[in-house]
Length: 385
Ligand code: ZN
Ligand code: ZN
Picture (spheres, rainbow, N blue to C red):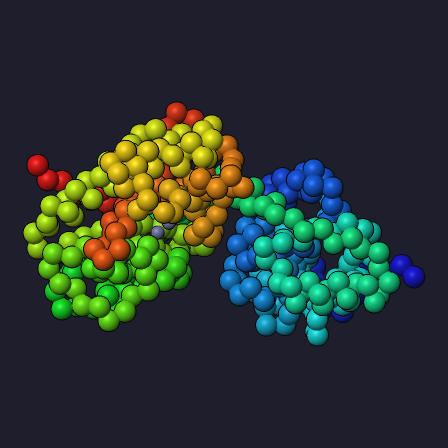
């Protein structure tokens, strides 16, 4: 029996109005599908789902996209029906009652998908089991192919509207960080400072936080990803703050390290070294560079001063709809790539000394063929003679 989509329950044709960038993204994705030798791709990661369709829901369980050379379908449930229809203008929105798999079976038949790509990093094992069981029990001969980095490859190079959103997210984040840093005072806890950041970002119009703020004081600042707690700020200890807003879907990510009262020689030395490593990397980074070479720029400065072991994470990461995305400025061979013009990456060297504390400084930069544009405006770093 041939199956026509028009007769499927829950099938709705939207207005057909779609923005040009969504259509351009679909075209680019379809070229990648051909390269990866699949007939269709199931997109379940929230950032990629939003990037391709314009559907802004962040819930990982609010639906998936099925994209083939001729079709673009958003499968979701009743809770998201109106929302999806309003936003995903280039997509046909289909509503499932019980499980997504039932409609997927019909779509795979209709579009004759035999090799179906899925996002290995985003489809859970349980979802995978259920969907493959459903297609198998329906008698479909579908080869499920785990893919990595397909939509992420497109997301790596930012368009003008994306850059504008990121600049707004960073501007808001910096305004809040500037105020919160002025209000730092002995007696406040890390958690109180984290709440001031959260409140400032929300009141400033953030859609959400890009990630839970890190406020790490004293010895806690030796933990690069500390969770703010009851530790009380005191004079003379490093205070590391890493924060960012999400605005119009796009993230900001910035770190500064502060000290209350006069700094000791150790803080001056470590801070100055981290800043020197960051400035060096920002001066030398550019599109076309190998990501391993990019990572090495700050690492060499820090290692030459004898602190190589104390800088145990990568130099930076791509930022966009997700706070961590491609490319990676990392020494990890598996993530090796040539840096592309139009990517936004962080430059965030740090030195962490157990029992003392740490210093990290993080900027966001736009990669260009001849260098970088530092997107930060809040650049008043400590300087001592
Ligand atoms: Zn950060
Ligand atoms: Zn970061």
